Length: 119
Figure 1 (cartoon, rainbow, N blue to C red):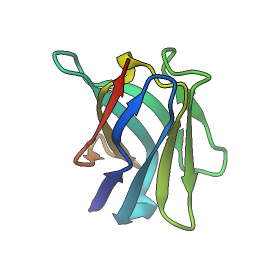
Figure 2: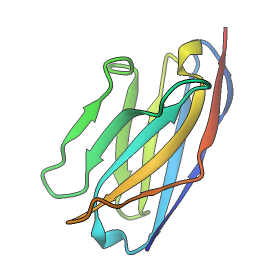
Figure 3: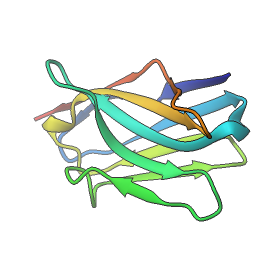
Figure 4: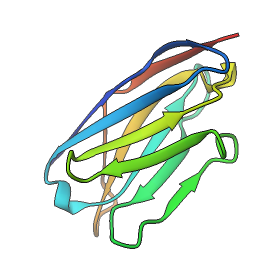
C-alpha cells in the first residue's frame, strides 16, 4: 500500500508561481514512476510530468508545460514536487499525484489539489 497526500494548490494570478508537494508513505520502495496529472472541468485527466525513481532518473513533460514546470523528488523527505512558473489560466485544474508500482499495472492516486489561475 502507498499513500499519497498532495498540498500546495491555490489561487494565483497569471504569470505567478506555485509549488505542489506530494508526500508518499507506506511501501514507497515499490514505486517505479511518479507523476503529476491534471483534470480541468469537462476535460480528461492528462499527464503533466513524470519522473522515474531509479538511479537513472528520466523525466518527461507535457508539451504545454515544458520550460515552465519542473518535477523533482526529495528522497530524504519521500516527497515529489511540481514547481509551476509562468502560470496561465489554462493551467487551472485539479492536480493529482500518481505512483506506479514495479511489475504491476496498479497505480495509486492522491486526493487532488485545486490550482486556479486568474487572468
